[in-house]
Length: 138
Image 1: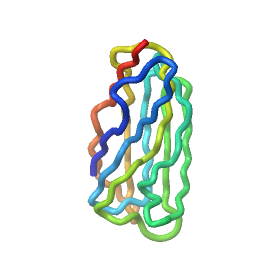
Image 2: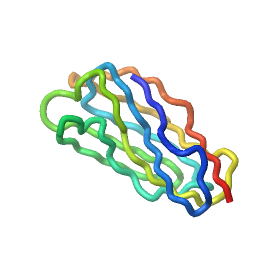
Image 3: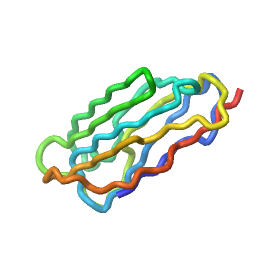
Image 4: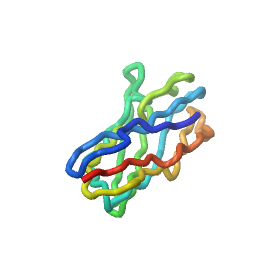
């Protein structure tokens, strides 16, 4: 199981852009907690929305997010009902909208931890991606 980033490599001050951590797993997952940090000097958080990874097959989920104004986001997505999403699947963990607020050579967003669980509550080993870097232009 591993994560990759989907998002622009640069943005202009004042521009709103979307960033999505993408997960690819060869194991079934039923719970997906994640925490990340972002550069508050260059990026303003506009919103966090649930991704489609656990919702595949029209499944019902419970999505919660908490934002720390110091530059952290904590999310948790849990499948409701029995089972887990099918193995060998991929998709977006969440969609994060940022506004570029200050020029920066390398503004970063970094996943600090992710501990997906299978239906039995066992942690699925997951490789963290390198921090996402975006250049903020004037």
